[in-house]
Amino acid sequence: MGKKLPKRFAKYFWDVNPKRIDFKQYPQYILERLLQFGDLAAVKWGLNQFGKDKVIEVVKTSRQINRKTANFFIKIYNLKPEEVLCFNREYQSQHRAVWPYWAELSLSVDIFLPAG
Image 1 (cartoon, one colour):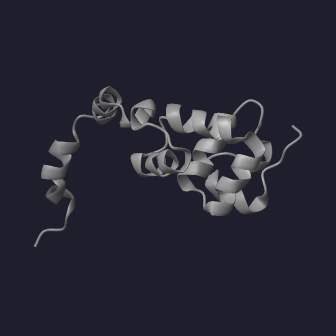
Image 2 (cartoon, helix red, strand yellow):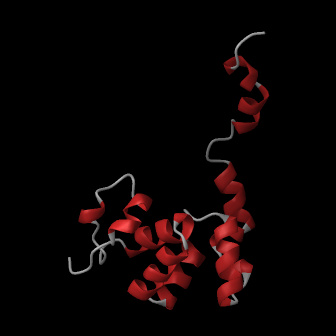
Image 3 (tube, rainbow, N blue to C red):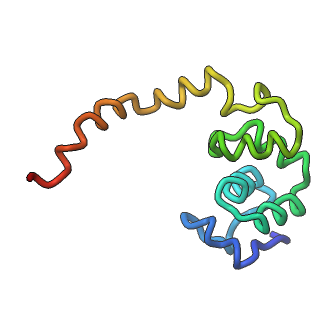
């Protein structure tokens, strides 16, 4: 591993040991985290490390970034929303169907609240 993640960006990788991230094996994962949760400095760093083409590829194909984040990069890079996975209607319906019980849960949330 030649590249190392700066300590100031370690907070975006709370579920792994940031010192052991393999840049060659997991560029998609790294960029998804930086684009979705990072500040401007983190995004710039990711862009410098992986390049504009890789950032655009991640924005177009990621299942981890949300529509708000994707829309930001659509505007920055003049992408078409239909090229971006999270704006695809079929993906949206599948994404919502991962756990189809949200509506039922929101109706019965009062069971978790204290009585009275």
